[in-house]
Length: 393
Ligand code: FE
Image 1 (cartoon, rainbow, N blue to C red):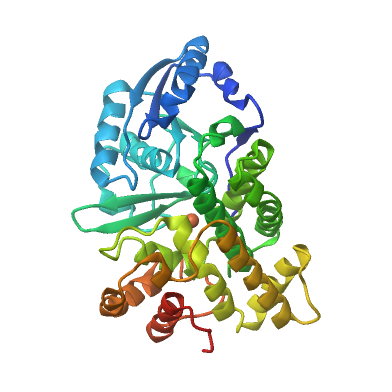
Image 2: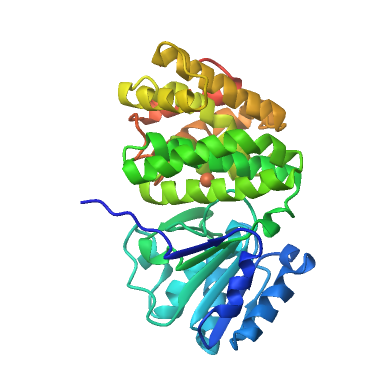
């Protein structure tokens, strides 16, 4: 038996934020990130709508990028003091992810962080509150997913929390919020969304419901990402929906080793954090070349190429065309082709290769990857993405 879970309602399109004035409830906590939502006037708008709905609201502000266990626990305490029946999270992936985790400890103050690390092990939520998410970036899809990434700074580990209990009740996908993204963020988050869609489509957990969403997301990203990067409003709007569709797909079909590698290389090097979407964009063509040696995966990559109108007479040629297309996106979006080009120091890369490869193989996204990978193969793959060499293993 399989499961397919999404929010009950997704409000989308121009002015969908105004749905908040009809929200039914008594008290809401509004969880926010660094301040851009306030600067662009969206916080005031939300507060006005909630007042119209007769909902008393308090704020949890300044959730940091890569939110920590500490931030989560402090937020949960604030929720316990206030007693909301709605948790509303607005912003990029970080405030929404943090709010999802706060929700667990608000409903179950005695549960420890360690208790929910194991995927799909959460207690039943919605005894105290429901959850509404409003994304401002077009990438993570967290407004519709069962995932939340929380960092334990003491241990230096990022935990991808997973459970359908934290799939939000309502998502509001209002394109006005996505208009505020700077181009670099458009590029990174857009390639993250494309990676979600492609990895979900070829995942061992794929199925008819996720396939439809994943493929439509790929086609939409292909059509609108460049124009969105150039600042076109209509394209931005379509990208906001595409990333949401990709989120629905991967929340239920899971991901693959592009994400495993991005998770573990991201914070690994002293030359600086590799942004998640950028890492995915760099790795994806190499991972496709690796995975395509598995026949079932090759067929599905070729289907994607076919839908993009670049299919050839045999699967291998179609896959080569797909990888070429992905490299062209990177070039147009000013994303490097290799980790070396990104600026990771060679001796540090080689020194940490064993450790990073081991961690990537163990990542939560590895089991659903369509081709098996062991540590030796992962080392070769990481070397290929560092030096830009051809995948022949
Ligand atoms: Fe991602």
